[in-house]
Structure formats: structure tokens, C-alpha cells
Image (cartoon, rainbow, N blue to C red; front, side, top):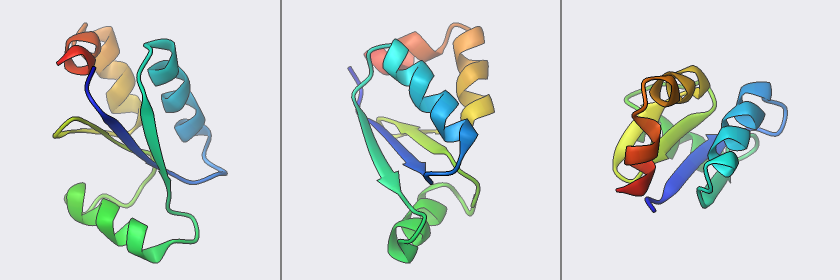
Length: 85
């Protein structure tokens, strides 16, 4: 299963939704809380091509995007193969 990295904040309902779907799929999640960590926020922005919103989700080397992007991948049947690779 691919490594999943998700940048979050503790007060983000979209982060909770994204983590819930990923856990339901059996993914091992590395969560990075950027709330009070400017270095982690800068890292996220650099990897996410300037996107500042949370969550920002990465599966392996693929930048998925945010929660809506993750659910769109799942609806399209593309999330499971991405997680499996």
C-alpha cells in the first residue's frame, strides 16, 4: 500500500472527512499538523504548488489535493488503485 501523507490542522472538518475515508480504505496515514508549525506549512505549500488550504493529501509521489479531490478520486474508482500502488 502506498504511503499517505496528509497536512492538517486540528480544527478542520475537511481533514476529519479525508482521514475518515483513508482509514476506511485501510491506508496508513502520516499526519502533519501545520497549525502552529510554519516550517511544515511552508513545506506543504512548496509540495502542493502553492496551495495553502488543508487538507493537502499526497499518496506516494502523487499530490491528490484536498478533501473534495480525494472523494472525487474515490467516486471515479481511481483511489483504490492509487492506494494499492
